[in-house]
Image (cartoon, rainbow, N blue to C red; front, side, top):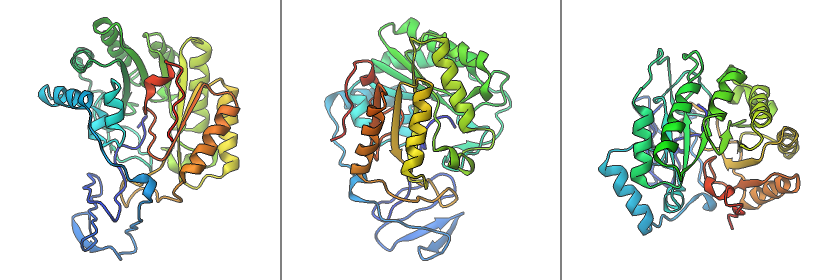
Length: 337
């Protein structure tokens, strides 16, 4: 999938049902269900980690958030924000920003950090999705829209023309809305990248996900560090006026030296925006967490990026690639203090 993880890890102090490789843990007895079988948390195949204090948030919902949520539910709209149980939903919705996922819920790739369904959609597309998406944006009165999707290697162009059709329809019906796309890598075919970049977007994003050494096993074999870099580089060269963006998950075993190397590689191809967030293990079948990155470390990585000349570096445990995405166009400094 082209976006960040969409299902949070299960922790000792919360009860969450994970839809793939089901696991249920709570602090009242600490039990787990794995593949439909109730098991003890002492099961060596089940790793239960305590969530550090900085990963716990207290939700506060303002008037704007409640208005957006009411519209979403009344009209049965679908957003990644709710379906992914994003911890930043209140802050983003309150600022008029939301993320919508295109082209279904089945990805043709199987990255080991992501809990999205893997399979072959066999060319299926919802041809009414451009109009439905544009209507959703209008109903939600969004000022900034992030469009993302699963990988669709089953389509000849990876879904590039579909992306472009959605963007054009959204802008036609919502001329004051800025659009960011977080796309697949289109198998490195620059023509397909150009199709999306020409559609009227403000920001083009493709996630490198992790440092070069960890690309495999973290990402699907069909994805690569070099391919993502090439896609981002071409998008910027082709349309210098469009901002380019990528996201890196931390906590997978990367070193500080490798983070610096990644920042240097991204800066060398003129990527404008980088986000850093904490990797959270979706299920027991996914890659384990190597470390919890502290808020102080996240701030250090952010400063490294700013010192290297990035337009913005958003860095924090709960940051996901679309976090407060609209602020970069306002030239705001997205601090997390």
